[in-house]
Length: 69
Image (cartoon, rainbow, N blue to C red; front, top):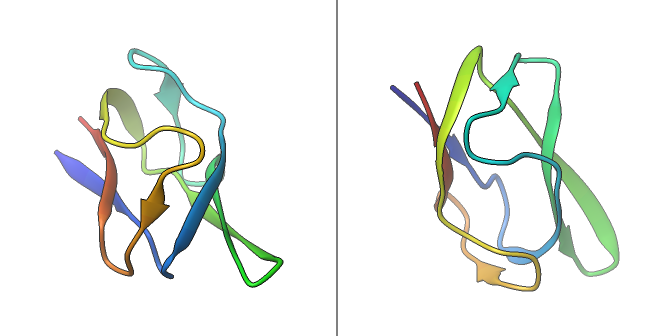
C-alpha cells in the first residue's frame, strides 16, 4: 500500500480520482494550491483505496491525501 502525500501546505483545488480508479505514477491525481501557485500530486501504480480529503480542504505539508494499493 502507498500513500499520496502533499508536498506543500495549502488548499485542495482539484481531485481527479475516485475510489477504485486504477492509476499510474504519471497521473495528475490531486492539485494543491498555495499562494496562487498550483502543485500537482502524482499517482502511484495501483488502485485508489481511500481518499482522505475533499476539494477545498486545507492540508499540511506531508499530510496523507489518499491511499493506493
